Length: 102
Image 1 (cartoon, one colour):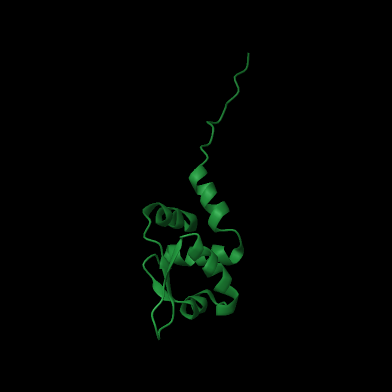
Image 2: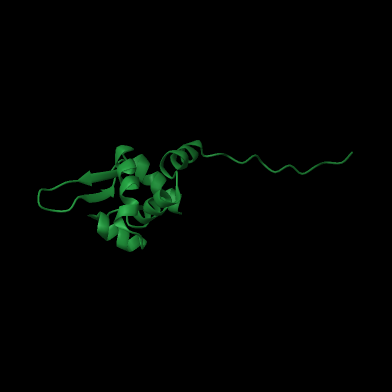
């Protein structure tokens, strides 16, 4: 009678999988989320963030709009000043974003 070694079943982090499927749907969003995970308290304009990501503001504009609509980014508008973006203060989404970039 032989005993087979069985590895313990791996736990699947369903919340994390849902996060990735909902927020990191393309490479640009992946880069944006990674940037904010590495700079969770950063608040800046689209051109500033585009410069950090080495991308054009135009190429990021729709992805930023999507992430604002999804609630992962917060958009702050001021008259006569550029629109600013920052990571949400929602603890769960912040935690998932940091885990995403780890």
